[in-house]
Image (cartoon, rainbow, N blue to C red):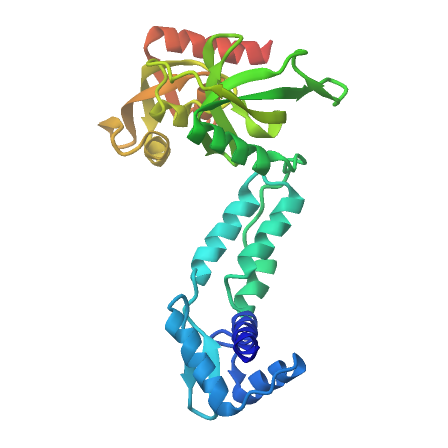
Length: 321
């Protein structure tokens, strides 16, 4: 019984120091004794000192002892550093696929990894969030199911929805989609997965926040077709599929960062003059790619091949009509 009480006291001391101290917030032996007394324990100074040594020996964190004015104790090294947790919390806030309710739950969990000072900062973020966010709280659970299906090489079945002109949710078709999932990806704050769809006989891309009633079946997944390139999926996650082509672009110098950002440092570029350059890139030619080009307001122009130039003109004309 005494051994069990000692273990519980040790856990309560850890929780107290973890939740209330950091480099700017400390606790004295008196603070620790008062906290533990309120919980029904009555440790003396020597016992608390040994408890702190025991906690430090675990190795996942450090409790420092400051003897400058009085014996002060505080947690310094934690599982994650404050900068790590800040980055994770910003990623959560920026993700469209995480609902506002789930966002609050995630931030609360992340707060457990930092001290009291950092907790206050996390609750008053300097980061601008994603604005409009999905209301579908099942996204995370569905993503977990898809991940298990990919790992277990099983098919999944689900309903897929869109919205009508009356803004009502409408499922596509009467039957469930049956898909062999291969890979998932987050792109522009949205969660996608790609897989072989039974009915159409091709690999398709789906947005997880548009998935309903998802189940993992016991049926083995169809092996990946040789034509499916997982690496290319990174540039093909948007919902408007296209075709792959090497494209020549004539660019203003201000577009250089954008070229490298989208296609990587391996993208071939050649200087034309002090203000312009050409780029040869392998692109997934689609409305999404054309939208990216238009976003540069004329600072990027498609010059070859002729088919891509004509498809771009047709896409722009379709918007104007």
